[in-house]
Length: 409
Image (cartoon, rainbow, N blue to C red; front, top):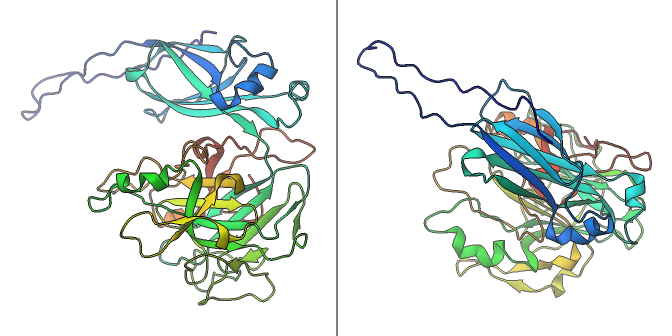
């Protein structure tokens, strides 16, 4: 399918008379480009596409094309062909955001084999015309329903660090029991510091088998004490108190379902406490780094029996390695810090856990306190309930929202 009207005019600087000795130079002309997007399933999800008979590509993909160089041009909504392609004709030079989605109908989901919980295919990628080829493949991971997922992370802070919360959502169609499940803060290193380069920790940050953590807490209960119904949210606060008297930018978290615990803590006796099972603890309980974060939700396990290791020779303590087969959900939050003198580390977790971290935080540290990182909802209901997007790619699955505990977008 060809897309009319994609071209965006390029303005040129015109050299005029001498302006105080300053010479205006006209930038070189870059001709419009024609690029064909080719939509294919991610290699892990080829069996799902094959079951649907999509051997040539993913058909009828809905695409939102947004210029990243112009604030005046509106996003364009375009539909791909039934053969899995989309021709962007006469595309002006520049940078673009391509958001692609193909949701499955009820009849298409019925064609999938038992146990295949795919709901569609989704991708969010950047396109730079200067480096693009005439035919550009775009791999779309399958969106899968899963069970308990991270729905909101709200630990942005300025001066006051104890008013944050983590929200979970039962994305499945059956009841989930929280008893004994683990919440952990994974190993994180933000930048490529000269004394502590990213390469020093690659065996940890790109470990395909596990995520390393030493701050870990688990839900109370003995098996079926804490049920979560389909479509229900659970809020875990660092401190389940009204934080507004302490900090005017904080919120009231007395209605949280659980609170993290610590030896130095403020306790709300009306809210159940999490149980500390980690190697170290933080004052007031679990919270995450202000620049980058790795958030882990895992199945119940005896932490004392899990393998351990040390990320580097300078590490003063062991780290617990939470294996992949225990993982329910992982969120890797990238840095948006604008003033960093060093490059960001390329990866904090292996793609088995998150293909591409969520860079969904603003650069104004003070204003960012009011915002959180939230998981997107599908554009339609299933079983009369909201279902959240899960492609194991934080960059596609999450958005920046105003913090709102207990409510999904």
